[in-house]
Amino acid sequence: MTVGAPPRIHLLSQIVADRIAAGEVVERPASVVKELVENALDAGATDVAVDVEGAGSALIRVADNGSGIHPDDLRLAVQRFATSKITGADDLMVVQTLGFRGEALPSIAAVSHLEVTTAPRGGAGGRRIRVNGGTVEAETSVGAPPGTVVTVRHLFFNTPARRKFLKSSAREFSLIVDVLQRLALAHPLVALRLTHEGDEVAHYAAGMPSDRAASVLGERVLAQALPVGQTADGLTTTGWLGRPELARGTRRQQYLYVNRRPISSRMLSAAVEQAFAQIVPAGRHPVYVLFIDLPAQAVDVNVHPRKLEVRFDDDHRVFTAVSRAVRETLRDARLLRPVAAPSSAVPVLSGVLPLESVPATVTQVREADLATSGRLPAMRLLGQLHRTYLLAQGEAGLIVIDQHAAHERVLYERILAARRRGAAASQTLIQPEPLALGPGESGLVEHHADVLRVLGFDLEPFGDRTVLLRGVPAVAAAGSAEHLLRDLLAQAGEEVRLGAADSLLERLTITTACRSAVRAGDPLSTEQMVHLLRDLGTAEDPFTCFHGRPTMVVLPLEQVERWFLRR
Ligand code: ADP
Ligand code: MG
Image 1 (cartoon, rainbow, N blue to C red):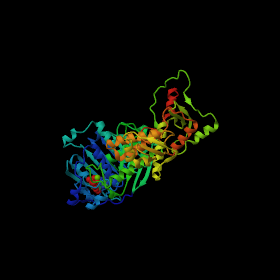
Image 2: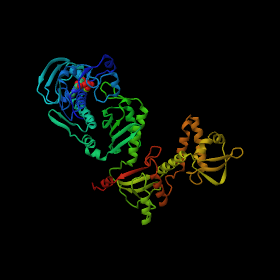
Image 3: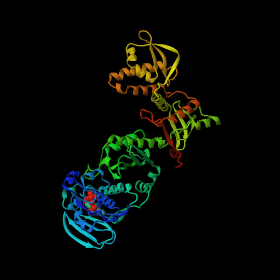
Image 4: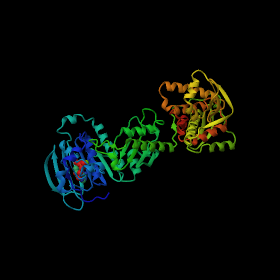
């Protein structure tokens, strides 16, 4: 932003002032820092220095090299509802600046000893005003460099109740750091500094967004983070997602922005956390920085006194877009869930590892490599463990795949894909089979004929209490169709009884996939394993089964190395 002449300040009309979301602007030292740094950013500053003493209770000074305030406007600037940022009520709908209410300086001045020194660019003289507890004490001309310095001393000196509510200095100061970091992440082109009792606490040089994110979040976190970049439906979502293993016990490392304004939003937090739900353990919260940018008229920023919340004209649209951006980023990252491995290995005392079907020849191994196409990370199949898990070597370490969960996912998506194409995934039996139905079952067959057909059953009435099975779901394992049908009928009867009929098709689809998948304990040939992995690689979401369990986990090599005391 180029810094020009200071925009002029005016009093808002009563009509506009009445529309300002009322409430307490200055709650604690961190709110003062937020308002003052926001003013500096709005003034186009490229360099902002924040000095704090006594966790903000003794002194907060914010110095910037922005536009400055016109000398004739300085007195207005400390009055309520005086602003250079909006004029009419319509402007409230399309606010582009961080501030817009003309409330911050007067609110701060009312509860502190405030001093503002300012000079516009281009040599016109500087000016200084001093306000004590809301009363203007002095206004003088001074020599000052271009920009503005706001000094706030003795915050809450005249409001002991407010002062009493402050937390420990350490806590108040950490809130100040948090405020500064939140603003810093969204303004990488602005250099920001923070000192406390004269010691430099943070120094963010101007740079690329990723440089700024690295200095705020830490190099290591950012190096591992997954960049997000998606535009859909007039809404852009950018930023970074921390890997699941970085998830914390608190939400403090979640940075959410709407049009570069730091906000908090239950709805959007939920959108992100739901997308993470299957890869972050319950009670842990993912780390992320997300910038949501959309047209100003689609957001109302005038809803919270400290501007910490916004309202969207279409919640659903924003939720969906953010949720999709996060989901797809996680999916494309081919995230495996790392296992919490025991910190020391259980010694193998005797015998060999019960590996079965270890591919022995070069051809088989190459075939196994091919199996890892699609969405799966590169891996080489090693074999089957206890007839339940496939073992594979991946870049990160040992990958363990739950054969049942994996197959379930494959079959489930296959059924859905067939349904989307409008075809029931059915295989016709060469020899139709008559099936005797139990009491109650014939009624269910009739009642749920449509659902059964969509799932792939081709049933023909055949006398009383008997149907002719002409076709079965394509995914059904040989010889298991009759059993599956009875299971589905039982489940349908039960669910309808429980009033859960509306999602019946979905639930029966899940059951069909589950009952048709290979089970734990089924021996698999190398060929079958290779097939399974290849199919899984083409699944839309290969990493979780629809029960929310992972289909695979990775035992990181570092962990193995730790067992052998190599690290
Ligand atoms: P708002 O930011 O909502 O307009 P404030 O009370 O924070 O209200 O500030 C009042 C006005 O003072 C602003 O509109 C702006 O014109 C001017 N101002 C405040 N701080 C600065 C600054 N650091 N640099 C330039 N102008 C400033
Ligand atoms: Mg302001």
